[in-house]
Length: 179
Image 1 (cartoon, rainbow, N blue to C red):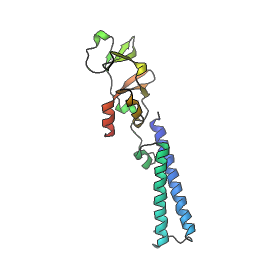
Image 2 (cartoon, rainbow, N blue to C red):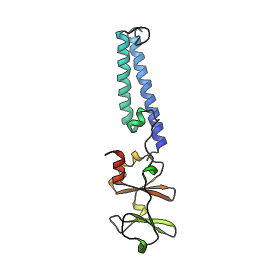
Image 3 (tube, helix red, strand yellow):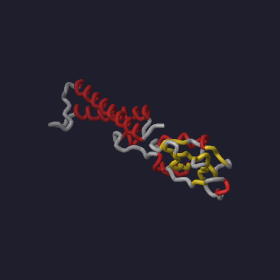
Image 4 (tube, helix red, strand yellow):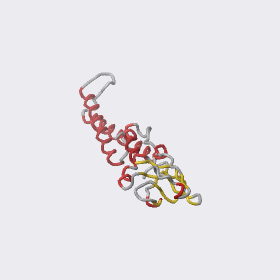
């Protein structure tokens, strides 16, 4: 699982690589056409228009390849890493803590705590689901990276070290994506 910072850096490097490739292709066309292209620099001519279109095509194609290679969200790629995806801790909702089975009222999902340490989840398909069987991610992990985890369980825990910050239910996750 990649963090927001890692995805922003990947978006920046992919964008810069696409920009350099677009500029190199445009320069190649410029030299190939006898250095006559002046798109917006003094006069408008066909060679300059061809260089501009060549830059746009090379830049767009390089962005497409970069997106496939580094798998970053479109907004992160197109803004050169300025806009990163949402971190998981922002989507996490706190779970009520229960100090024993007798305190659980049977409504909703709750975190079972024994001697101050979380040990399981109540309110899912099984009576008590041990925390080891529930997917958990650090709070700084990008929410866009969580998609495969929802195939196995209806929620993902968000943790910071040993502390459980909250959980992201499957429905809330897909709602945040706009699906």
